[in-house]
Length: 204
Image (cartoon, one colour):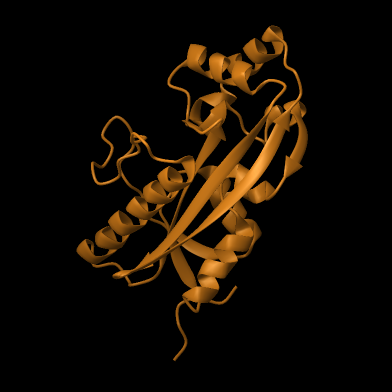
């Protein structure tokens, strides 16, 4: 019997939608609540003693579990649901999205002239089954002037992005070197996504 070659994507990120479309993966959106009324089932608080790897996997898996429950409760067609979470690791510290412009400027000043890791965990669930993959990449920024940082923050681009920058946008001007997955840094590692789809016996 032919299966429906569609999945659900539980993410508001336009970048993740673009990457799935680029890869020819058919999907329907499954949306959670947006801030300030976030769903309590997905806690993105960094826990004491938690490594960046454990943090990003935990959040991605929590999103997938909650999304699978929503599919059941809304009586939607049973298909795999894909979720993702991206964070930066700077000296063992989780760096998420900036809370305001001053926070974005402070984050970028810390990244200036240094290397950091970008971690993107993806998770896929269907019913009780849950699997995940983790993509780890390294990005090095050239030294940034305070004026460059100020102009970039004033563009508004950093405010909804982990680490206060988007590699696919103006921040590409800051990057000296990348080691790892470009799509993983942007927010959805396509190689790992294909592996998950294959595990769930969905055609890629």
